[in-house]
Length: 117
Length: 356
Image (cartoon, rainbow over all chains, first blue to last red; front, side):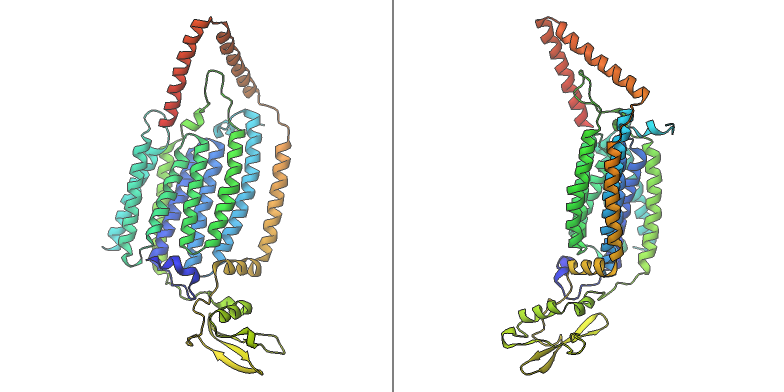
């Protein structure tokens, strides 16, 4: 059961069972859906962006699980790029949120539902 | 148990989880958050049992259950906690738990990168902005817990939609993974042919060669290529040069073969990133630079406050003024009484906030 922990040093990593992959993918799906529910139902703009980060996390877990299953590192490399994009998105989105807050003194997403300047 | 029964169990557990999530989301009226979290945990347990029943021979490591329960539980708190700062802190907990999952998947480099980049950098930015963009409480309030944080928008509809997606996704994942075959080998040793120094060091450590006698990995004197013999993705032998140009082929069957010779996670990621995707790094650098410039430009921009927001700010200032002058105008004895009742209200409000 503990074989996955010692894989890094093994010369030939043990193949991952499809059932194990299934577990990781279901956890990733659940995390994604929790993020989605949060994005739809929360009204605070910052929490909505936090929920998109949750969804990024879910995608990351799925990518890393597939990377382990196929025993190559492309999935991990992709997660590095996802991290980069998440950082860029956080910087820009949070700057926008600060602008919006300065205009209406509120973080309520519903206040911006009417798109008048 | 047949796959059909286990998928029925999976759907039933998903429905229980959905009810739990819907209960945990903050709403007007009664919002039994603690009960909701417990019901959601029950649903998660049911989902894990259904998965375990489906593939009893391939149960994951026990730590998997620990980390995924922490990750999903704190993700639920992220979307259900009425205080944004607490939600951000719970998100850090989700990050730490999912980096634990990464370690279980033998992706150590990504696990540490995740903790450093997400928990260390991105979340701190979120916390700064949360503290920058909170409504200022008026003098009669201790803190402003605004309406839009206290009540969520359409929690029931959101949960139903989300868990329909869960049902679809788990069905698709089950059908997809059933067709896949476990992979052996992979590129675990394929990169060793490009790392002769690593091979040589491993050989020295396993005492197969002795550099003080001039032993070394044999190489072709014309092309400079090392004789690391590969068969598919596996190293099947290396040539060693010793003495006056004599050669010897060492195979994995030899007892001097280094047992731990293989590619580590960081080496694999490094090769994949720099050798296979160098263009991606350039693009990522440009994206980060643009994001930085954009954030600076946006944050420096002067914005006019909205008419409504101006009015709201004025009325808030008026309330402040009034309560301050009321405090100043009241005589000493009556003032202490007023302060007492005010203090009571404060305690009440704090207790209410924690209870949610």
